Image 1 (cartoon, rainbow, N blue to C red):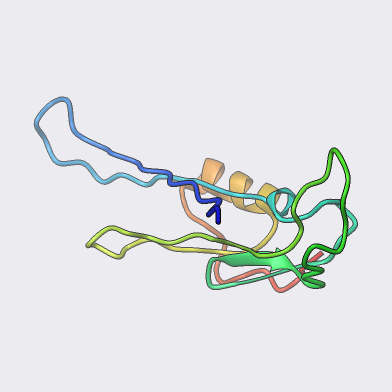
Image 2 (cartoon, rainbow, N blue to C red; image 1 turned 90 degrees about the vertical axis):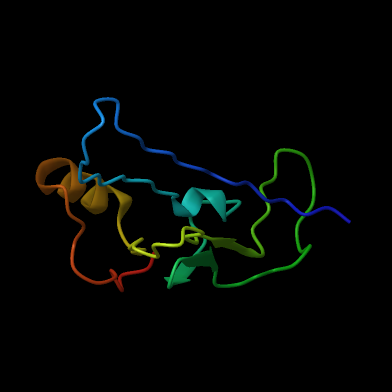
Length: 110
């Protein structure tokens, strides 16, 4: 059996010895869970996947797995990670301009 798992680890440290407030933005798009961008996706609480979940329903070369789920979790002891579902464009713009994310999850799932 294989377990297709990737871990992303972030480490932030001060180089001047002072304490700083740090906000880090990381996103994963629905393109990671679909074979075709026309597939409907669903998300909630950091879990992203296709609506259909057609397990082993397609085969061939140049195929992406479109069943199963992508999980985003915070493994830190602080537990201060905010997970939001929604438009990656809107989230990137909001964080880039204001340093914050839009309030609540975006329920307009493609």
